[in-house]
Image (cartoon, rainbow, N blue to C red; front, side):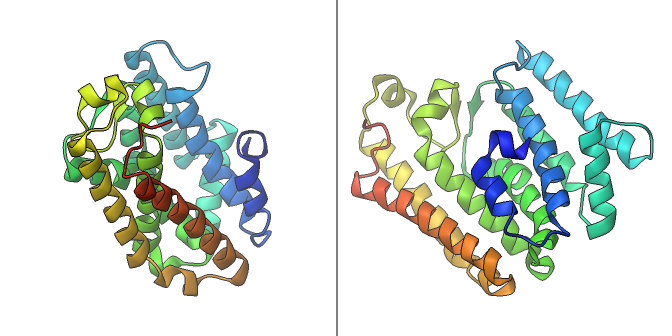
Length: 242
């Protein structure tokens, strides 16, 4: 599943120690399936049906954790959790953020945005921390995940609007409909760019905690996403321009 849907991430996983790769594949398989329920080409037709499908997927994880017969992906994930002491309770928070995406999204303020990212990127980061050798930096790995996700939200404003989602607080819908970024729009984007950069700065210590291969991947990801933010700034924070 990981190789088919995300060959870049699959290649990055192959650089990690063999002992943790099956666990990373299992984590990916669980969160990717949830994402497909919400955004995949064969997703259920209505928000209610999508939420019901997410409930059923989370129930499969509960069955696996209880030792009952379950889908192979959550079964593998529970096995990985036992081997590597993964905090699988984080996935309850993750699934709550996925349920938000089942219907139109309008994030009202930074606090609501942070709650969403705490459920999605940060929750997965806490699970991944032991697998990349950063058990002692779990909260920083979580915040690094939030930095990447916030940079994605800045980059993908137009794409998210096409899905009837506004993740960055306060973006005027009139500007989004017109495809024209006014001064207020640009100011709000600029503030989120600054927040993302702050998260990247705050989590620098994670890089020194992990092995050389993981560190190289983290540095590369920071560079790529830093350039995304730089491009947005050079464009005057107009993420609606072609």
